[in-house]
Amino acid sequence: MPPAPACRPCALPSIAITRRQLALGLAGLLLGGAANTAAATTPATPTATPVAEPASGGDGGSRPPRGRVLLTVHSGEGASRREELFDMARLESLPQHAYTTQTPWFKSPKRFSGPLLRDVLAAARAQGTQITAAALNDYKADIPYDDALRHKMLVATRLDGKPMAVRDKGPLFIIYPYDESADLRSERYYSRSVWQLRALSVR
Ligand SMILES: Nc1nc2c(c(=O)[nH]1)N[C@H]1C(S)=C(S)[C@@H](COP(=O)(O)O)O[C@H]1N2
Ligand SMILES: [Mo]
Image (cartoon, rainbow, N blue to C red; front, side, top):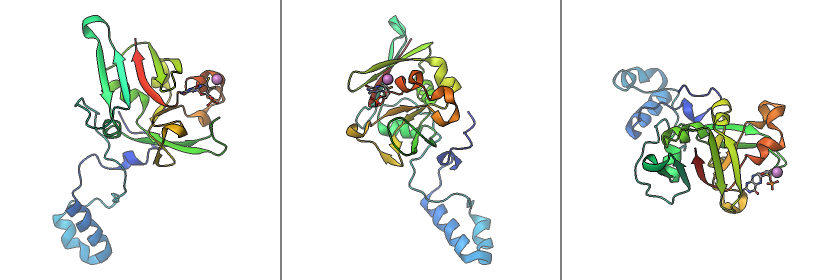
């Protein structure tokens, strides 16, 4: 899927850049004109900056989570029942998206970032028409699967760049791009914005 234009971390090249390449590229930039020789031997990417963002662009492919499981995605029925576990590393291995929006929970606009809900569902190979999102506080909300396809819904892992504590409605928060339409700024979508998200059940 093509990355969203507003998505800063997605601008990172998906190929791995070694520290050496970064160092050479930066040295080349600093040396200015003299960088030509270094540039000839180094596929330096001038736009790549060594920001402290998680590597992204992967497909979040299945592997046993090594970190604490933050999200479980249940799908399928009978013999095809599946349960996919996501730790922070797996969520951050998916393409990362970010946007700033007003919300009912905070006075000022906040920047939320994390994978798109649709990418989490795809990584979990969870298909269906309805999603039930469950929270740590046992709040549950039904979300039409289509919402995830129509809107750039986030499974937000960060608020203003920082991981969210449970007491701050984290660690995972379902976010809609509320600022994009008046329709989204309604009880219908706010009630689907599950904070302290712990599980998604797709059917
Ligand atoms: N985990 C969790 N998420 C939740 C809720 C909740 O009780 N628990 N309430 C929902 C509802 S009904 C609304 S309108 C919004 C705003 O609820 P709040 O004002 O209690 O945060 O969050 C939604 N997400
Ligand atoms: Mo609500």
